[in-house]
Amino acid sequence: MFLACLFRIFVWFQRTFDNMFQSMTNDSHEKFFISVLEDYDPDLDTYVPEDAIFIEEWRRGRHVRRRVLNTGQRIVDYKGDPWAPVVVPWIWIGDTESKVDLTEALSRYMVADNLITDLLETFFPNSDFKVAYIDPRTFIEHDFPAEGVRIRALNAAR
Image 1: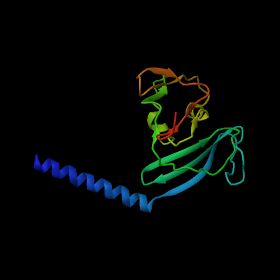
Image 2 (image 1 turned 180 degrees about the vertical axis):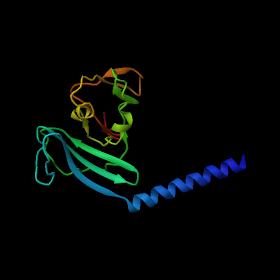
Image 3 (image 1 turned 90 degrees about the horizontal axis):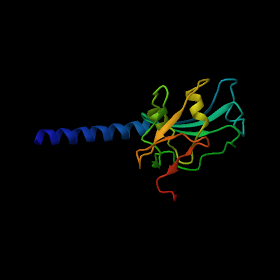
Image 4 (image 1 turned 45 degrees about the vertical axis):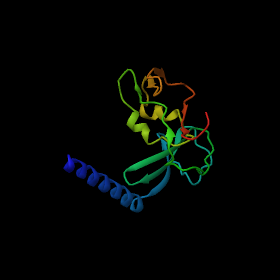
């Protein structure tokens, strides 16, 4: 029992120091567009073009956070902390027809004020898909709303 506790403490220290070291050495920030038709320059465009999605990405070690702006939205600097805790609106999200699980793929988009809409079409281009999610409070499956789902900060008022 003593050795098991000692091992757990050792593993905790190792992970803590690994995360601290990685966060000090591997931080990065970049902006880009996802588009199938054309390459756009995020430094020149002020609005997201009609056929594109704007992504602002932060990396801290192995961890990634992405802010997403959809077609027609104005591109402005992000004022918040991309690493701030958020309310995750689902415990599972995916295509109910093909059973493709998008939960892990969308976890990097859990940044306050993100509106998850057009991004799903990027995951399922030119296909007939039916995205649903399971609510973490009720465990009830819901169809993904056409207007999308807004990611809220953990401390934000409802």
